[in-house]
Length: 227
Image 1: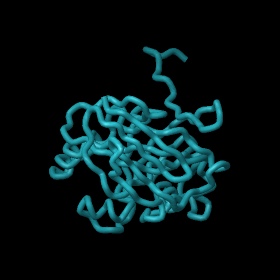
Image 2: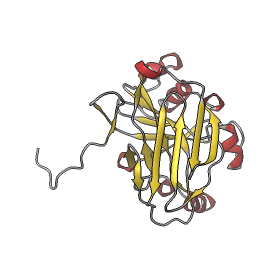
Image 3: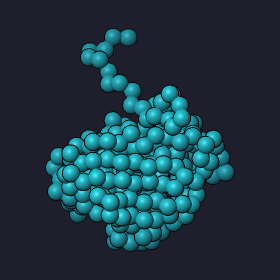
């Protein structure tokens, strides 16, 4: 096959304990999946799950230096458990949803909160507040065979050593199996899909030079520096 220019390389994320890499197809995110975060964003404490996407090439595998993005004066952090799918399908039954999971990782859903809010106020899509360059740092994926299916444990984030977010996976309004089953009723999921599962309360503004560290108990940690 001949292309008019070389295609972009396949986006992939390292797999912990292996030299193999996880090829990424799509990146989905769940909005307001912790009641305390929903409250701080002015929403009901438990609403049906809703979803948005980030482009795969917005990921920053392994973390490290992340460029402060264009067109924002209010960049905010959100630490999340990320689900990596090894298989998928449409209308996946709830009792089969976890069978689709290859592994789990720690991710940061960076958000241009000012741009997102202006778009919301006008009733416009807020994709550019979420799906920007380097807006999805992610740690290595831990296979299910190693970490199982974590359902409780600390979800935390520090900025320059100060604890900003401190929640627990048990506080998720919609659990991983429910998220997968619900999302698959809208789109056919497939191997290579990632799902960012939402963030606990405590999101706040970060600026150039900040060191952001976060983790999920039993899954791992992630560190970035805004440059």
